[in-house]
Length: 104
Image (cartoon, rainbow, N blue to C red; front, side, top):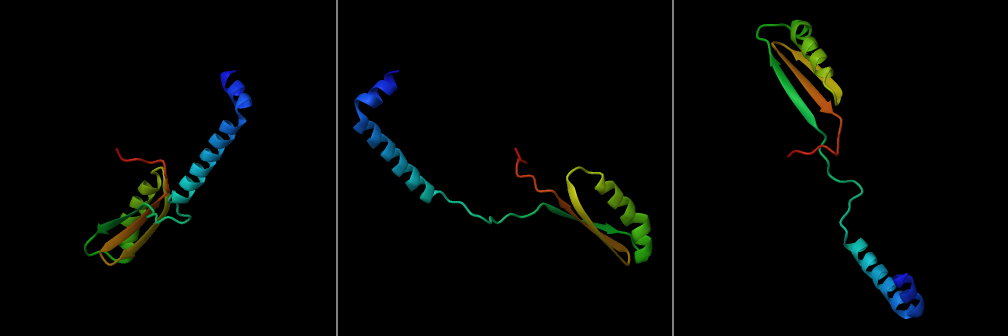
């Protein structure tokens, strides 16, 4: 009751206090540094698999496919892209972006 009684008895103080809060709020809004499109690097990992002397077909069947199957079972994996070469395979894994994830 004290605050409402004070606001009714002294309206000029109440109006000045509210205008001061609005002015400081507008000033703080313009000083706030926000970006509509921030520079965010998506979480991506690349895995290289060496299988000497194997053809690309052998690398894909014996190494790349089983590893991709195991990686796809990980929670948070968005896409997996694998490529087989002579004696070498590479996998690019893109994870879902989780802005609440924190390193501590």
